[in-house]
Image (cartoon, rainbow, N blue to C red):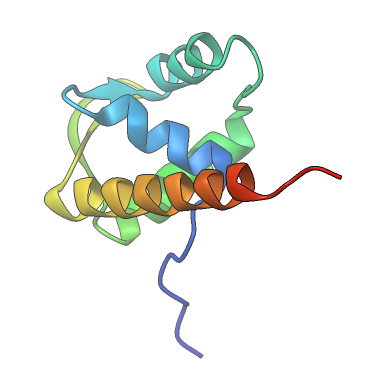
Length: 104
C-alpha cells in the first residue's frame, strides 16, 4: 500500500516548516526556533523532529544542503513552501470558523 500524501500537518510539522522559511537550518536550530516562537508551547523531541525531517525529505518538502559530522542542514523546497502556504490558509479558515460561532 502506498503512503498517503501529507494532508493537514501536525502542529510540530507546521513549526518545522515555518522554521525553514527564508533560511537553512539544522535540527538543533529547529528545536530552538519552535520553542522560542511558541514561548515553550511546542517542544520538539529528537524522535519527533527526526521523524518529521525524514518524512519531509522523502516527500521532497525539504532537501539536505550540508553535512558536517553528525550535523545535517536542510532547506525548504518549492513544494515545501506550497505545503506551508496551504496549511496556513487552512488554519486561518479554522480560526475564522471558530470565531464566527457564538459561545453560549
